[in-house]
Length: 248
Length: 215
Image (cartoon, rainbow over all chains, first blue to last red; front, side, top):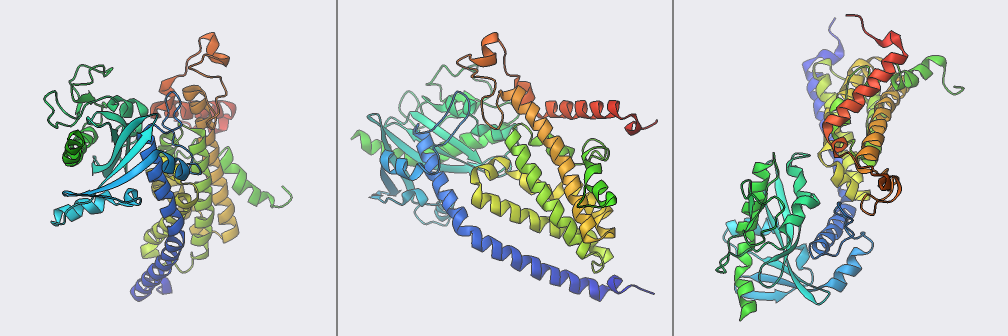
């Protein structure tokens, strides 16, 4: 005799029931944890911005943020101004760091003028201009917070990624890669924006030449590196008009 | 073990030694290589797998008489996937930094062969209590190896344990470093995990000849 559980109708009803039960359970858990997770993400953004301007707890080789407890206070202390650049219009908004870069990029594609957040930090008498940027790596999104001085020379960078290969592309968030950007010029010698290339042939692995617009690539992470370079080129270029106004 | 009968005790203890999922069944190697560069990540992965496998085995065992055999693998996958999403969400909410470090590996618990293997081989044919013990036992056996590998890789690779500089400071040349000792960066790469697992398998089989297969 055929077992009850072998019937097709039983199988279908079982599958439907299972989907409903599991689906509602997960939806309930996800929605009840969402506020906590969002708060974590908000603090992480503050940590990232502080990291890019050199407010971090790095030791000799690891990249360490300031603690989440201290982040809001330090953020208030060091980040003195948050700007939103929308075309010609520049406004101040102390929630600008919550602007979703991904959403603004799709807005721009849909023809809506994009909001560009820019954070201005003060530390030890120096001014840092920090821009959040986002692009594509090999598997998924890569993003960064790049701090620059008024001449668009990089002062610090924090890179992160969604799912680059561990040990290869994922190394963009390692210090040996991020620190290479410090001191690199985003402009060429005649003052035009060229970005920073991730180069496999720059013959400068110790990165002594800071005006070559190149840093050394990571072996085995060509596509991630190209993605990072493309992101820097296309996204930071958008801030050029603002930096020009600083010179006037 | 006063609490458990001898047979039940075996369900927990066997996977720790003579039926270890990693060193004997050779399941779950992928994650054992991938996330053991630090002791902390090893411990978290072990705890997550104990949670997922313990509960997953009970759920599958409770459902074993009503699961349609035609779609049983899909049902098993759904149960693991749901549990893993719960672990992922809870980590994101309460240990955000760690969940970022573990990243894709939490999601990969779903494909951890130990979990599907125990569901299929044990939970579908045994009661919930036994399945629970089997799940905990196998996850512990997996976790122990993870922790041993993580211990050696972090100690020899970074000179730290759980982030504490137990061997002294490599830059200031204090402690062991003052004698000229250097960290072995190779220990941080996946191939060394394979070698450490290999050494564990070697030690285990040389102590218990019954484990050596005849060929």
